[in-house]
Every structure is written in structure tokens, then in C-alpha cells.
Image 1 (spheres, rainbow, N blue to C red):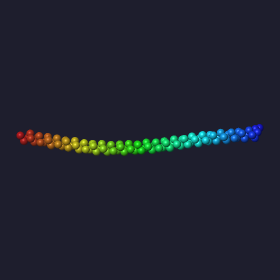
Image 2: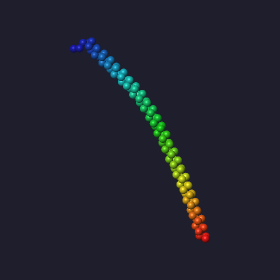
Image 3: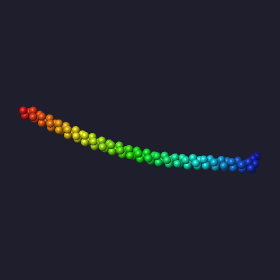
Image 4: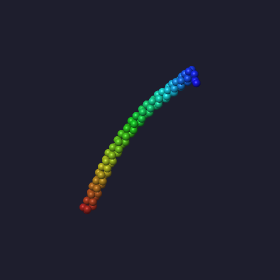
Length: 96
């Protein structure tokens, strides 16, 4: 049978060992919480960059649509001008 002193020493050792483990886990927890906060901040930065990129894509798409419409109108006007010029030439040829 173990003596009171040996039981006490074993309990004291286990308590100290448990306290050391707790301190280690608390330090690791604090480190992980700091890392988590850093990652959350980075995520917010990246989400902001993504939102900016999406806005730029929208603007580019709108701009391209406007440019394409203007270009289409210019082509229609050019064709109309050519048709008018051809009509003038036909009129000149038929009147002679």
C-alpha cells in the first residue's frame, strides 16, 4: 500500500503536469485566435478586392455594350451613306 506522502506527491505531480498542459493549451489557443483574426482580416480584404473586380467587370461590360451600339450605329450610317451614293450614281447613269 502506498503511503500518504507518495500519494500526495503523485497528485501534486499530476496537478503540476495538468497545469503545464493547460498553460500550453492556453498559449496555443491565443496563437490560434490571433491567426484566426488575421485570416478573417485577410478574407475581408480579398472580398473587398473581389467586389471591386466585379464592379470593374460590370463597367467594362456596360462600356463594351455602349461602344458596340455606337459602332453598330456608325456602320448603319455608313451603309446608308453608301446606298445614297449608289442611288446618285444610278440616277446619273440612267439620266444620260
